[in-house]
Image (cartoon, rainbow, N blue to C red; front, side, top):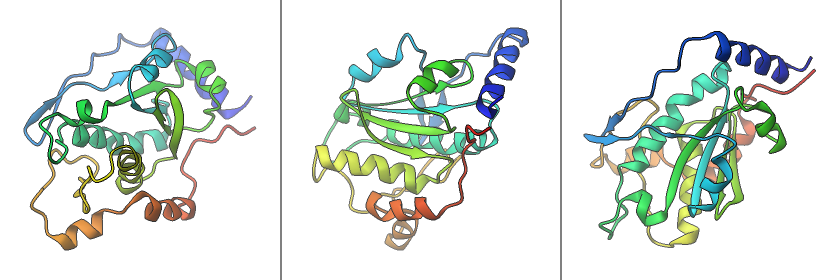
Length: 210
């Protein structure tokens, strides 16, 4: 039996025998309340992608160690962008770019994820107008995640993104917008600079192997 299939079987058993799932609660970032991230299902996935310009979806397992490692990074990225305001605009980030974050449990919906060629977790896919645009494969760091997002946003609305974006660390509940330029350069990098790093990092996904 393949590892992914075994995870799915164990996860399905846990879903049946476990206690009812506790509803997620709002969080706070930069003093602003952030609603729980959208949990997608096969019934909502495609329609949600088509309803927004940008959609980023984390495909994950609640039991995969690499997924658990990546969870704070993705959650913090969501909170950071959700509470940000694009320069020169009074609209929120979500409204200005029509950008949404979500996740789908590939244990609960194993067949659905497999049909979309997601066989390693976590795999985070960025869609534009319902079509695949880019992806982050594995438990990558905040620089990789934000670099992927920033590149896509700048292509759609050139000049709308900060030259040096100050990004939070995974698990932070705020970001210091007054950080020094040296700190910005240390903690940020455009997507084209971040991409080579992704290739050299050790593999950090749960592989679908015999």
